[in-house]
Image (tube, rainbow, N blue to C red; front, top):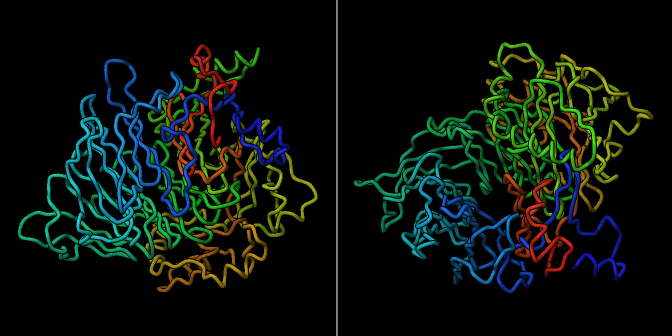
Length: 603
C-alpha cells in the first residue's frame, strides 16, 4: 500500500500521512480499499488543466437488490458502473458504459431519479465548451445535445441539475454567470436566441426567450458578477441557492423568480453550497477557506467553520447523522462494539424520522429538544472535515444542557456578541494549528471560561433586529456585488498561507451602523465586512471540525453521504468509499479485506 511505502521510506511527518480511518462519536469510519472506483487501469490521472472529477449516483430499483449506479468523469472520459459500495469489491473491468470525448471535457452530470429504471436512465452531462448532452448509459444511447452550436452560451458548464419533481425540466449554470432553464422536449433553434425581460432585481435579471414557437432556453438568469459556480435546490424544490465568483450566496424563490436573501463571503469567491435536510440552513464554502452557515429563515450568518487550509470545494449535509431528540441524549455503557451497534441502530432511526421531528422544533411545545446537524466539507488542501451544528449555535438564547459539543465561551476586550469557539471532545480533534489561539482578539486571553449554560448576547449584535427591518436591509443592501481587490488581499495577507479570522475592528459593531452600511445604494466591498451581509469573525460563533484528516494526494472534488458509507474523490480520478461504523462487517469475508491486500492508489 502507498501508506506503508511512505512509512518505510520515512516519508514525512504523521501530519502528512494519508489517513485510512477516522473516529467520531458514532465510531470508526474505515476506507474500503477494494471498493475504490477509477479508470480501469487504476493509473493516477494527470490532472493538469483538467476539470474537477465529479460523481453522480442513481438507484434503478432492480430486482437483484443491487440497484445503485455510479457515474464519474476523469479528464475526457466518462464512466458508468454498478456501484457495489460496502457489499462487494469493485470490478473495474466491466463498465456498463464508457465514453471518451474529443475537443471538450465533461464538467458535471446529474441523473433524473424520477424516471430511472433498470432498463433506462436519463443522464445530463455538461461540458467545458458549453454544451449539455442527454444520454442513456444503460441503452448506450445519446438522445439529445443542447447548445450544440454554442449559440446560447459559449462558456464552461459549471453545474447541471434536473428540476426537482420534473421529468423534463433541467437547469444549467455557466462560467459566464448565466443560468438557463431547458425542457428536454424542445429544440434549441438554429439561430441565437432573443430575450425579453421578465423580472429584474438587485444584481440579477431573468429573461424569457422570444420566438414564434416554444424553444430552449425557456428562461435565462443572469446572476451577480463572474462565474456562477454552483447551485442547489431546497429539499422542497421551491427555492434555489446560488454561489458565485463575486463571493455572494443568493437564494431565490424559484417559481416566483424573486430574491429571498443573500450573504457575502469573508473574501474571494464562493465555490459550493448545500441545504440542510429540513431546508432551514444553507452551508457555503469557497476561497476564504471557511464553511459558512446561513439561516434561511433569518437571512443571516449564524456560524463559520475554520478547519481547511485552502479553498473549500464541496460541502454536504449528512442526512443519516443529522438528528432531533426529544429526550436526553443516549448514554452508552459496555464495550466499544456495543457502542457502535447502538449508534448504528440509533443513527438509522434518526435518519428515518429527521424530517418530521425537525418540524417539531418550532412548535409551541416546550419540551426540551436536542438538535444536531452533521455536515462535511472537502477542499483543495486534500482534507476531509466533519462538523456538528448544535443547538447552542442554532438557538443561542436557550439553555445548553443538552448540547453535544463542548463550548468555550471567550470574552474579547469588547465583544459585540461574544466570541465563541466551538470545540469537540472527540478523541480525534482538529490539528493544533487550527486552534482558537490564532484568532485576533482572542489570543490575548490567558484562560478560557468553563462551559456556560448560556451564550453571552449583546443587543448591539444585530440579532434582535425585527425581521421586517432585517429583510428590508438585506433587500436594499445587495445593490453592487464585488469581492476584495488583489491589493486589499495582499495588505491583509502578509504570509504565504491563508490566515483567516482577521479582526475588522475599525468597523463599528452597533446595529444602527450596520443598517446604515446596508442601506447605502452602492456597497463598497470593504464596507460589507461587519454588516449583516458579512459579519466580522468575532461577531458569529466559530466552529472547529469534529475531525480534519488528510485523505488524498490531490485536491478533493467530491463528498457524498450515503446510508452505509460516505464517498470522496480526488483529482487523480480515485473514488473512495468509507464504511460507516459497523457497516464494514459486511466485507470481512471478502477476498480483498481491509488489511490492504488489494492495490491502492492515491488514498
